[in-house]
Image (cartoon, rainbow, N blue to C red; front, side, top):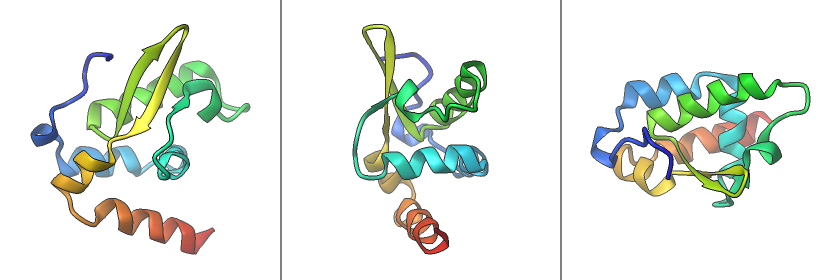
Length: 103
């Protein structure tokens, strides 16, 4: 596992909302909502630079929204759904529902 994954009890609402306040990061959460694990490259829109995505991964990871683990030459990303649901019941489900309604 990569460093800087906060423990469940260290995840704060302020950091989660800050992380999800960016449309690109919110879209990433939508892609991971089904419980899948995807590589950074699979999640990166082609028009977005790798260095830009590195910043977005760090914000999501440091806020406690995603798990990031190395696998070979890539990092695998997954949503920390159980941890987020434990800390803020209903928050993630509400965000995902609104995203579906707006799509």
